[in-house]
Image (tube, rainbow, N blue to C red; front, side, top):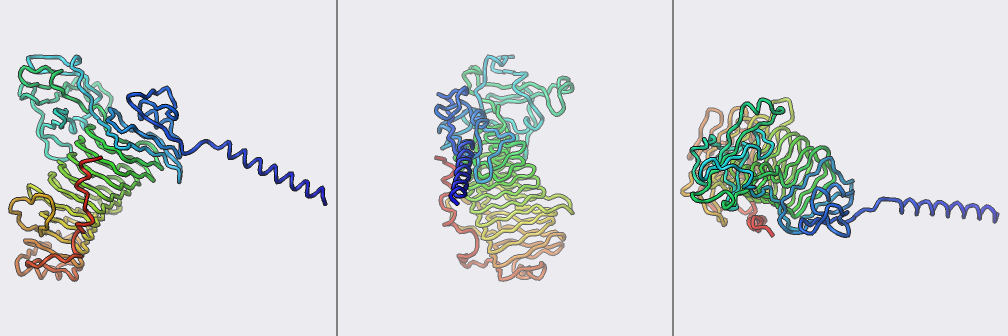
Length: 485
C-alpha cells in the first residue's frame, strides 16, 4: 500500500515538474518594444534600449508584444507584411501621438537647373501612372496638387515652359517607359521656384512613401492606436486582406489618395478616426467587412464616403462636413454577386459649397438610421434604400457655416430602385419615382409610389422631433478630433 502511494506521488511530482518546465519554455509574451528615431539603433532588440526604425520593431514583434513609438514626427512608414499576432494576443503599435510623415525634403543637389528658377529630376523614385495621378509636392506645409485628384476633378499636366512660380509638372518618357517592367513608367519632374529663389531655399518636400500604415500579404490580430499619418502619396492607412484588426484614435491628413482604404478581404474595426484634406475620406473596396465609429471627415477633394464592390460597411457616430466633388457613393458589382452594403447610424452629413448627392447604384444597399442629410440630393439608380428616423434636407443649428441660400434637396428613384422608409422627416423640393415627379402638396402622394413609407411626413415648418435625425449631443467633440493631441 505504501509502495503504491509512493509510486503515485512520484508520478504526480514528475507531471508537475514537466508542466513547470513547459511553462518556462514558452516564449515570452507581452513584451514592450521601443522605437526612437533620434536615439535608437537598429542593432538593438528594442527592449532595454530603443531601435531606430518602425520596420525593425515590427520584424522583432511577437504575439502579445506592444511597439511603443516616441511621440514625435517620423519620416517613416509602418508596414506590416505577412505579420500577425495570435487570438487574444495581438501585436500592438501604439504611437502615443506620433506622426508618420510621408514626405522628405528635396535634395536640391540631385536636381538640374535648366533655366533660371526651372529645375528637373529624371529619377526621383519608381513611378506608375497611379502614383502620378495622386502626386503632389509639399510647399509651405500644404500639398500642391495642381488641381489634380485620382478620384476627382483632375486638370491636365502642364508643359514645363508653362509653369508659374511654385508649380510643378511631370513629362513621361515614352521610350524609357516601353523598356520598363510592366506597370512602371519613367519621366521627368519639373519645378519652377519663385523669382530669385533657389530650389534649396524653396523648402519643397516630395511624398516618397506610399502610406503611413500599411498591411499586405496575410496579416491578422493587430492593433494600431494613437497614430497620425500625413502626406503620403497614396493612403494614410492602406489595408489589404487583413482580419481581426483594430485601429483606435487615428488621423489621416493631406494624403495623396484615401484617408483609409480597405482592399481585398479585410475585416477591421476603427474607433476614433479623423480624415482631413485627403482625396477621399474613406474608400473601402473588395469583399471587406469594415466598421467605423466616432468619425470626422472634412475638406476632402474627390469623395467624402466611397464604398464599392461586395463588402459590408458601417459608419456610426460620425460628422461629415462634405465639400468633395462627390459626397456619398455606393457602387456595387453586377448581380448575382453580393451587394455593396452600407449602414449609417447617428451620422450628420452636411454639404458645403456646391450642390451634391447621395448616389446608390445597382446591387447596393443603403441603410440609414438616425441620420441627418443636409443640402444633399438623393439618387438611387438601382439597389435598395432604407431610411429609419432620418432627416433629409432641413437645416439644423451646428457649428458649421451653412451654404448660402441652399435649395431644398431632390429625390430621384429610378424604376429599378427599391425604397422603404419609416418615421422620417423630409424637407425636400421634389421626388421623382420612375417617370412620376411630385412636388409641393403632391409630395404627400409619395408613399403610394414606393414599397413602404410609414409614419413619415413632409416638413411644413414644425420643429424637428428629438427622435429624428442625428443625435447632436452624441456627436459632441468630433470636430476637435481634427486638432489632434
